[in-house]
Image (cartoon, rainbow, N blue to C red; front, side):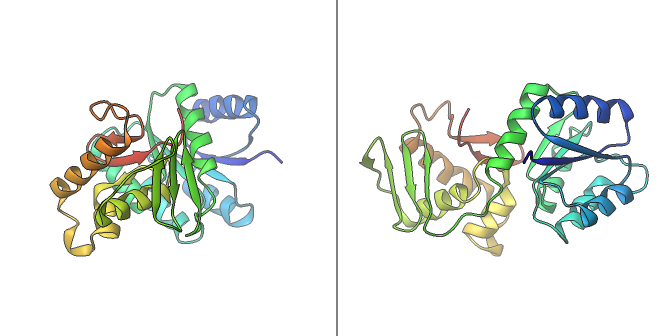
Length: 227
């Protein structure tokens, strides 16, 4: 069965473009022109993925994210003209999985759709995550690269495990610090940067140009499971 995608956007031309583009890539597409219509559709026929504009006529899209998160864990990709980093941070903190700024390239959007759908299923504690030559055994607390075990400190492991349980998701600084270090450390972004750099030194082919643990400037980090 084709994955079902709901597009909530008040611009008819954007909905038409996405309907054609997503349909050509094998997805079943439903549309809504406002928040009320979109939320009603989600309650009646939950899709596999929501693509959401923030500038809706009846309700701000940020509030729609919160409303959807109250009833569903479905992946959400925000598609918006709002390019300010605080808009991105708020959307991700409210529960969006990714954020794409309009105008956008359809190839990039398709890659992000595939990524969030791959990561849709929750990770089990004993799962083994493999990304290229990197092997992360979450149950045994072992990480290896090309068959060679990599020694990590406990906090480095905790940080990598958190990324590994959410591959291809943009994780905000605040969320990472809260989950790995605790609520009292949500402002310690410099501390987080140090540990991310340490992980890159141990995991990346070229730590100065990371391809595995990448930065979303001003927002957070993402563990990429593929190109």
